[in-house]
Length: 107
Image (cartoon, rainbow, N blue to C red; front, side):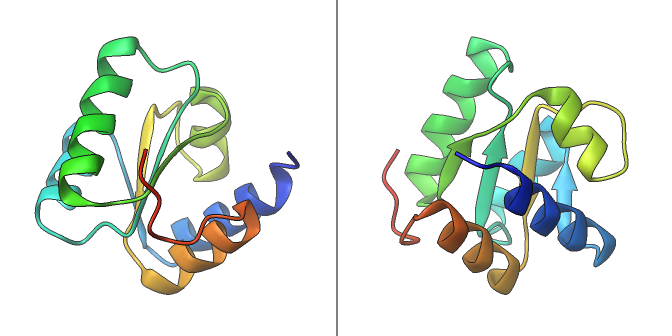
């Protein structure tokens, strides 16, 4: 899979202020209903992956494991990040379309 278009979308969303990063902020975004799509780094801890997997399934938010913590942080202009929430439907739909996800993804 070519990750470059996804990371480009991620950079645009971050510049628009539609990306939340960090475990607690992403968790709050999911639980408050502001999250449309969650990205967790492939090299995140097993506990982090399990927590977001369970939470996203419960709140019915699409989730994907993509890139490394360094890559995710780099493309949003921050240090390494294990989890990101896309809080804009347009950006989330665009990313999911590039990934071939229909938006009703069950993880």
